[in-house]
Length: 314
Image (cartoon, rainbow, N blue to C red):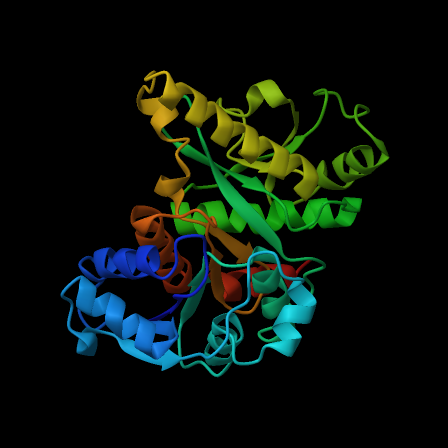
């Protein structure tokens, strides 16, 4: 397994990224190769600072960085020597098996669509997030920010993508898929969710259990929760704020601990021809480590190929 990592992205790069890479290397299987992409001199200095031999990693030099606030399309196309652009080039050339970054999320999405492309049949790639359940299990929420507006067929396809992700990466057999709405009845919601419900209710592609409401987010009613990216992003940001608030007041039971973004590592970009994971811009070393391990899991399950096979029969 050859694991590509953008060292230059994120609020605390490169130190936090290198520290996370060191943590991950201690757990990766023998023979795994970590490919660090970024300014070679800076990477060498950071490795020396933590007393890790340079020869434990493969370094690919990049002379440019895409900033967190830059325009994604403009930056990706005008900075071909950036760490993100080079990472995608390596993935496209199959010189790495997976690529992850805590850099500019928009640039990571644009890069995926410009380089490795979407899987044939995928209307829009999406981002996912894990949702803690009262039982201690985890659920999947998608989309969480890539697509603020969606048509009914896009939401339907998110059900397919989320179901495959939950089953093959997290081992949830025949996952229950729910459509986030403002009521359980099929006629509830706006025109988009009403139409999406009508498509989903007769599908054989996944186990659709109907509409769910916000109060069902953390119970066992659905393993996969489908919504457009505007709603999904509001949900995960609210969950993060709840965690920070309770942490501030020292009121963290085991369930609330699972709201910590560090545990989940990042969000895979589902629907593209490769294993790509995007992490939180504020990620520390622990979060980076978990992002790397998640990217390995996505690559090992060959999720992109499973999505491709599933969409051939839609």
